[in-house]
Image 1: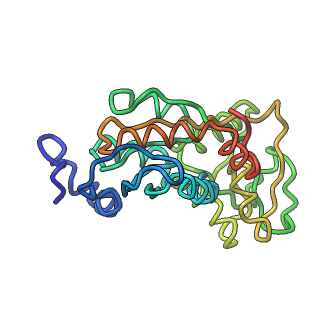
Image 2: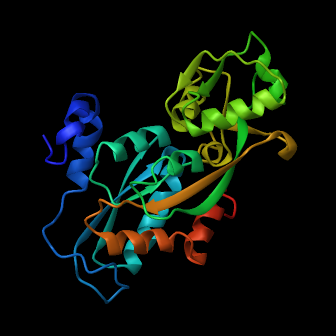
Image 3: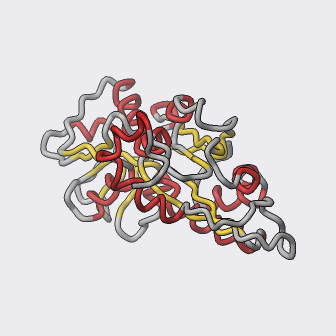
Length: 266
């Protein structure tokens, strides 16, 4: 059992063990002093950063990390992707990580005691995702109320689930989902596999599977804007390197990677 699970945290060990064990492996301290993340040709410190990130950042962050690592030799960025509410639970249980990026400010605000000052690095919007070719002819939010349509949504405690509820409530639309998923990628997967006819996901998630799903735009006046704040974790063993990575996410280079993937300016 990891050493950080002591005192009151030990009581939650059984529930969180499945999440914490893989994180402990990727966040293991290499025993070397962290002198920060230098540019290419600079620091030779072998720093392993663990970043907890919202599921909707899966594809773009992998691309961003490849660029970052080339510029910051000696730094390796590892990610643990999950729904923001799951990430918050990991942080509260003392997961060995260095930085956190959520898909909403509400989740981040609830972790003020555990993080540095957050910075919003991107925005996103919702779309209706359907099977390729939109076989059920879903064109508006109102179409999701059809009882013959199998709609899948994220659970209400998940950021994309809250955004979806906000959008539907604003239009006074009642949608009964066939399932409520733990993160946005699970919603996308249900539609990709044909287990659901439609769902609400972020625009960038639909764009990650262009040959498997179609995206139906939601008018801006009916839509919700998702904010992605990033922050260092106070328990990080690599504070300087973690701060450097979080700061880099706001640079023009990182912003171009995010916006090329469909994310909007912060």
